[in-house]
Image (cartoon, rainbow, N blue to C red; front, side):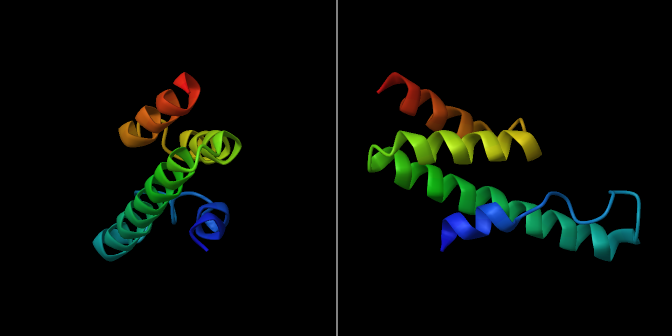
Length: 81
C-alpha cells in the first residue's frame, strides 16, 4: 500500500506562488507525507534486502526532491550491500 502511495504522488501541488498560504500549507503537507512514506518504503526494502525496490523508490524520490537525505542514505546502504 505504501508503495502505491509513492507511485501516485506526482509532485508538488500547484506552484509555490499560487493560491496563497492555505495552498502552500496543503502543498507542503502533501510533500511531507510523500517523503515520510518514501522513507518507510525504502527502509523496508533495504531491511528485506529488496534492492530493486529500494533503488526504484530512491530514484523516484530524487526526481521530485533530490535533497531528501534519508533516501540518499538508504540508497547508499542498498548499493553497499
